[in-house]
Length: 257
Image 1: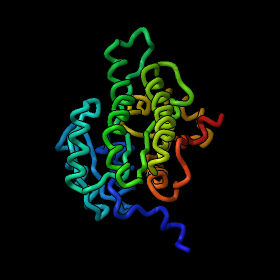
Image 2 (image 1 turned 90 degrees about the horizontal axis):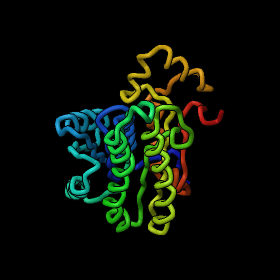
Image 3 (image 1 turned 45 degrees about the vertical axis):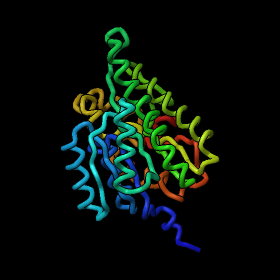
């Protein structure tokens, strides 16, 4: 019988990580590379994507490529899949990580604020899933990891666009899990809680808000981005082979309260 740790290896697989140039996306991309995958990283800037890919390739010893993609554009998403297939010949793992957050009371938010968050956080993953499906179905194997959020399960004031997008992403995950189970494609959602990343800079820089948020976390601290990488490797590997349509919370116990 193979060593249990071998089930976490993803040697020979090719992964796409959207929004992989910083924050949780970069951590996930590096973790997947360290577990053996070739990694394609997307960002809005080609220079940023290429710089990140070079750093990950250097640190992991695995091939990596950086591509500029706007995930809300169908044509750019479809072009992404074609470029990755040309580069690697396969698409095995899709991590829908690209996302934004615009906070504020509903009266202060514009329609364009709503559209920007929903398009990036929900339409983007829908487009990426649809475009990646043929390559995964052809091999009867695939892993889709949607970066939802604890705010797809609970909510906080001032997050109407973000919470709505993440709640929708969680249900998109469950629906695709049902649609694609017969094709050997597992679809799960990874739901982070409060992590010390760029998207939360405004909260981290406000001592009162930071302390208030931390007081609601049973582990009494913000998450370190490095703590998300192992969970992503689990969902991308054979270790999670009987898991689909699930939401995995990495939130310090916040949603258990």
